[in-house]
Length: 443
Ligand SMILES: [Mn+2]
Image 1 (cartoon, rainbow, N blue to C red):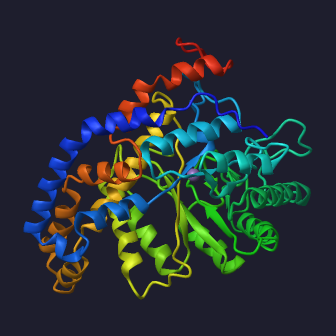
Image 2 (cartoon, rainbow, N blue to C red):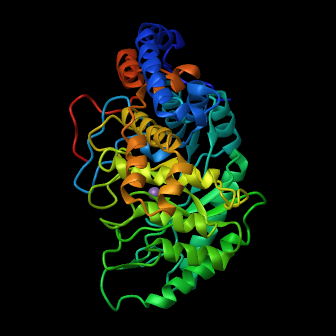
């Protein structure tokens, strides 16, 4: 049994740093509590600040195995020292994100990148690190060494039934690997589409996707969900088969009650009202979950909240609203939260800590919205008061709540500060022979 984690950050390093920072944090929290008292916020939280911080502490998400190294772009990749070289090392890095930031006790794997000979060994290794597995991700958007048929012209939508069959088989293999490690969802994102008009039949290409996915869906293990992820363009630049939430919803409705749409926050064209997309999917009972990230132009995979923090808040506002709305069926409303980002210039661990923090910040602020008041402003068509209610929550500095939420769970009040002082990258640079030297190298 592989139980060699290598260097780990000592818990007393976190505890000592927290001891130094706690008095100031408590002062800030007391000031916030006084402000909440004046604003009437605490009337809605009988347990006071403790109740709010508990709810924040209970909000968690999964780290993507592919986000633990420097991703790079098609122009190059500049990895840093001590980066992971295999799936076991990815788990150790993911555990470090959770240890420091709290809120990330799960990992989302990707096959074939994370394939190992013995999934049970992987499951035990993760459990020993305190990690579980969220949705599995299949990959039919690139060819693998030794693969029989090429995905150059598509996978689940390919015109050749033999290629579709190969892609279906791959998804079934990913599910059975996922079953062995305790995952309960399969996310399918395909790059199928066309670069030029005329290349692909627009209607029939989707028919083929639905037919192929139905074959995968038919083998979905009990208690599992199939998540379909849309994206407007890239790698296909003229037309993508599963391009938007409407296409995703259609797929889900064709497949059956265990199919749900996954919203990658960066998979929308500029100007798209993403919170309205989320609201539509909730309304249809088909919101499956999220890939958290942010973007300025396209699928940029930046740290959540780095570009459009207000949009992130408005998305969480829809989620908190749905969670408290008795009209929303709680059997179907159970979105999974996963991060999907890629790092070019940030240290991947620091960037992931950032997204955990930003998602929790948006959630915390959404909790502060007075829904009864907002409803009444909407009913009265009081535009200004309704917007002010949202802005009042959004502009609240919730940093003391986020700090307390981490501290309560033994994570770091200042996660990036502790990470930098811990010497983690230096130690991993020694352990992991394939890591880059301090100077970047072209690939
Ligand atoms: Mn994604």
